[in-house]
Amino acid sequence: MRTRFVVAALVATLGAATALEAQQAQTAVGDPARAGEVGGVAAPEAPPVPTGELALGTVRIRFNTSADGEALPAGTYAVRLTPATAVPDVVGQTKVYERWVEFSQGGAVKGKAVVSIVPASEIAGVANDPRPGLNRSKVEMLRNNEYVRVWINRGGNHYLVYLVPQNQGKGD
Image (tube, rainbow, N blue to C red; front, side):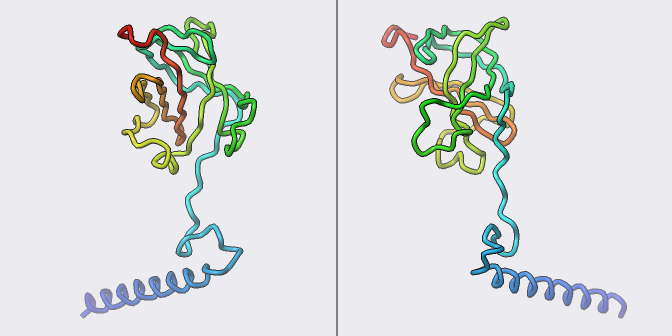
């Protein structure tokens, strides 16, 4: 008898919670104060974009490339996000999402390039390829050997850098 009472109370509680959730969802529709909510629950926010310097990790670039017009030979580089935004402004982008990164070896900056910062919640609309794991990176040749993409996944954001390969057609 006691088991039936507990089960009945549990069913009643779940039914009441479901009804309350449905009522909140209806209230949220058309209520400007709840515009950021979906079904009575706050929509997930994208992680904040860092505004200062940030070490993004180490990448191995297997191709001779150029970064911002300067030669960037094949090798292993430490990649660091700088606070400097892309100038001139990139049309249609928020300033903090287009920044500069530096590629360093032995503590010396060997090249700089513009990076596009994409929140993880939006990466599916930007790149169709498999994503690198959290705090991992991948470097790949794209589009008939026209671009080298450096893709770093760090802290809930994806960092995409596009470099131009050099010595095209010579096996590099």
